Length: 340
Image 1 (cartoon, helix red, strand yellow):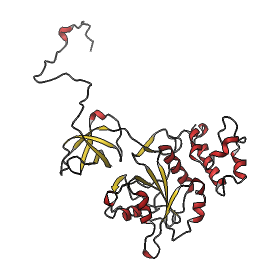
Image 2: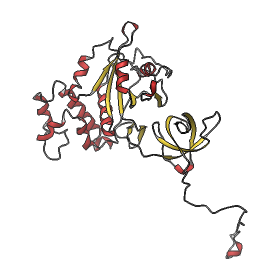
Image 3: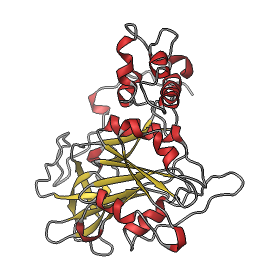
Image 4: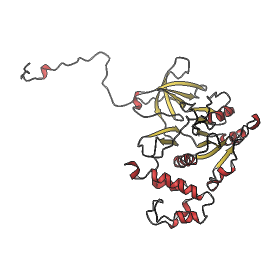
C-alpha cells in the first residue's frame, strides 16, 4: 500500500479534552509530613514488616511507594510510612522515605562481582559464628567477615560453638593479636554454656549474626530469643556442609527490650569486591606495623614487600604466617588480573 504524501497540520492532531477534576502531572513528590517512623524487621517478596512505636508499639505490613524508585530497603532500615499504619490484619501501609543509614554491611558473590548486596543496615556489631568441629572452622571466611566488619564501622565478635567437640585454644591463638572479643559455647552433657556471656555482650546493641550453614547459628538464636523458633539444620556427614535453614534476614528483639539480633541466612562465600584493595591492610591491624619498611606503592604481595621478613622474625606472633597468607590471598583475589 502506497503511503500518503499529504502534509499534516495541527487540525489533524487529536486534542484530548480536559477532564473535569484532572490536574497536570508534576515531578514534585508529596512531603508526607504525617508519616510515622518504623524499623524494618523482615523483608519478604516485596512486603516489609516494620516496627512502629507512635501510638503504641505494633508491627505494620507495608509496600514500597512508587516515588522511591529502585531504592532498596533492607532489614534494619529506619523508614517512614503513610496510609494504614494500624497494623490490623489485612492493612497495608506505604514506605515513602528511608532515613540515611549509619552503617551498612555489604557482601558480593565473589571478589570479582561488581554487584554488591546490602545485607543489613544500622547494626553496630557483627557476630561471626563458627563451629570448632562438625563442620571444621574456616579461618579465611572469618578473615573476610572481619574485614567487612571493620570496613563497615562495626565491632566484630567471634562466637565459637561446639567446644565440647574440639578445644578452642588453638583456634583462638590465630586471632589473639587482633584482640577480638570472643565467646565459647558448648552443649556438653545436655547443658548449654556460654549463652549468658553472649547475651551480656549483645545487650543494648543491634547485632548481626553471620556464619556458614551448620555452625549452630539458629540454635543460638533460639536460645537467646526463646520464641524465635528458627529452624535448625544438620551437617551432612559426607560433605561436612550444613543445610540452609534461614531463607531471609530477620530482626528479633532480645528479652526485656535489651537489644536486637538480626539472624541472616547461612553463607558459603563472602565476596569483598566492594572493599578497596588499598584499604585491606588497614583491616589486619596485627600486620600493619610491618609495612613501615615496605617500598613506596607496595601492594604487600610482591617480592620487595617487607612483611614477609617482618613476620618471619616473629614480630607478628605465632599466627603471623597464617595471617599474612590470608591477607595475600585476599589481595590476589582482588587484583585486576583476577577479574580479566
